Amino acid sequence: MKGWWGRLLRVDLSRGKTSVVDIDKRILLDYIGGRGLAIRILWEYNPPGVDPLSPYNTLVIASGPLSGLPLPSSGKLVVASKSPLTNGYGDGNIGSMASYHLKRAGFDAIVIQGKAKKPVYLYIENDKVSINPADDLWGLDSFSVEDKLVREHGKNVGILTIGPAGEKMVRYATVVSQKGRSGGRPGIGAVMGSKNLKAVVIKGTLQPPVHDLDSLRKTAEEAYKKIMEAEGYDYWVRQGTMATIVWSQQNSVLPTMNFREGVWEEYEGISGDLMEKLKVDRRACPYCNMGCGNVIKDELDELSELDYENVAMLGSNILLGDLRKVADINKLADKYGLDTISLGNSIGFLMEASEKGFVRERVEWGDYKVVRELTEDVAFRRGLGGFLAEGVMRMSTALGGEALEFAMHVKGLEVSAYDCHAAPAMALAYGTSPIGAHHKDAWIISYEVRTDRLGYTREKVEMLVYLQDVRGGMFESLTVCRLPWVELGLDLDYYLKMLSHVTGIEWSWGMIREVANRIYTLIRAFWIREFDGWSKYYDYPPARWFKHPLTKGPYKGVKLDPAKYEQMLQEYYALRGWDSNGVPKPETLSKLGLTFVEDALKRVGVLV
Image (cartoon, rainbow, N blue to C red; front, top):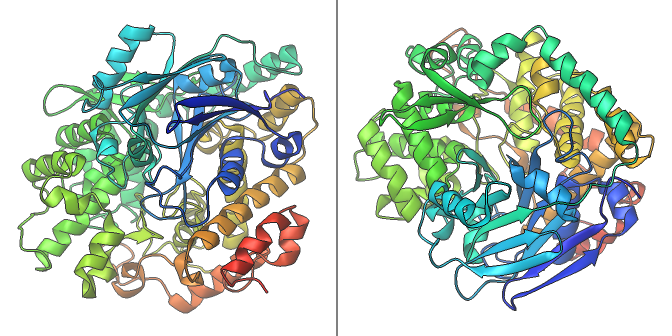
C-alpha cells in the first residue's frame, strides 16, 4: 500500500530499547495519519487515567501521507499526548524539517514511552536509532540546543527540542523547532521533559512510497501556481497572519485586558501595518511558497518571528502596546519553550487578579519589565512564575470565587486570540475543540462576521462541523498546512487529488468526512475515559462571555446568551451523533468502527 510506510518506531526510554512495530492497514485507512494516527495510538497504548507526567504516558510524533512531500505547505508534523494542562487529549501542529526527514526515515510515527534515568536525546537515521546522552544540552534554551545539535549532526536534519520550560514541566511547555516554530500548546513539551527527553533528531534518506509521483508533481505544480496567482497573495506575503490585528479590531474580537473587551485604542502599535515597516526577514516551513513567519528586530535588537496569536495575546490582551517589546517577550517564550497563547492568557489573568486584590503582588497592565521577568520566572518555575506555570484553570481554582469567572480557558486550555462576547459560533468552536480552547480546528469567526453576526443559528453549527472536519480532521491527518486554503482560497479538491496520487486510492469527500468524524468521536471518547464524571458543561466557554458584557466598541452591552448557546451545543451533538451530554451514542460508535471503546465508556458510567 502506497502513501504510508506501515511502520512506527517504538522507543522505551526506561529500558533504553527501540523496536519497529507494523501498523495495521485498516488503521491507516480509517485514521489516515497525523492526529488520527496519534489518537488511535494513545487510546491503545495509554493506561486509562494515567498521570500525564508519569513514565506511563505516551508521546506520539506522527506524520501523514502528504507530510514532507513536494506539494504546498507539507512540512508539518503532529505531536500528541495526554495533556498535563487539561488531563485530556492534547496535540499540536509544528512546521519543521523533521516532517521532511520523518517521511524519509521509514516511519509513519514515533511512539515514545518510559523515562530515561538521565537527560537524553533521540537520534534517528533511517533504521539506525540511538538514545544519546544529553547532559550537556539539559538546561539550555531551545535555540542553543538546535545550534549544538546542528554542529554535531549537520544541517541536513530535522530537530524537535524543548527549552527549560519543558524540563521544569511547565504545563503549557511546547516542542520547538527551527528557532521560532512551536507546537503542542497543551503541554507536549512538558511530557518530553517528564521523560528526560531533550530533543529528537531525525535524518531520513529513503524514497517515500508514492503511487504516482508524476501526477503528484503535476497537480502540486498547478496548486503552487494557483497560490501565487491568488488575489490576496501579495498582501499575504507582506503581512501574513499579522493582518488579523486590524481585522480583529475592526470586528470587535481583539482580546483586550484578559478578554474584557474586543477593541483597544492602541492597536496600531502592534498592527501588521507597523510590522511590515519593521520586517527584516520572512521564514517558511518546508515546501511552502507563502511563508507566514514575519521576522522583526525586537526591543533588544534580536530577531523574533511573529504571528497574530502571539502578538495579540502578549500585546492587546495584557495592554502592551509596543511591537518590539511584544516581540522580545515572544522570542523569550520560543527560546524557553513556552506557549505564547497560554503565557499571555496566564499573565492577563494574573494582572486582573492583582487589580482586583486576589493576589498580594502588584502586577500592572502593560508593564513590560515585569512581564519580561515573569516570562523567565515561568520558564524556570521561580517565585510567582511557579503559580503562572500551572495555567489559568489551576490558578483560578486556587484563588476561587470571582476569579473563576474571568479564567479564560475551556477544559483547561487557555483561549486563543479571539474575543467571543459577540461571536457565538466561535464560542461554540472553542467549546467543542478536541484539545480545549483553540482556533486551529475551526476559525468560524471569519464566516460569522460575514453573516448573521449575533445569530445562534443551525447554519452556523453545520458550518462549524464542516470546518472541523476539514481543518481538524483532514488537514491535521494528511498532515499539511491549512493556510493555502484558508487564506488564499486554494481549492480543497487539490488535496483529494494529491492524496489519491500518493495512495493510489480514489478518495471522496464522503470518505474524508467519515474519517474526520471517527477521529473527533474517538478523541471525545478519550476525554470521557480520562475524566471522572463527564458533563456537557466541559463544552462551555468561559463564564466571562456570559456574565460580563462588552463596555466598548460597536457591540457594547453584548454578551453570550446561555440558553441559546445550549441550543447550538445540542444541535452540534446531534450532528456528531452524540447524546445530550456529549457522549457518542452506541449506534455512532458502531457506524464508525469504534465499538472497541464501549467497555471503557461503560466503566466510567456513561454507556449502559
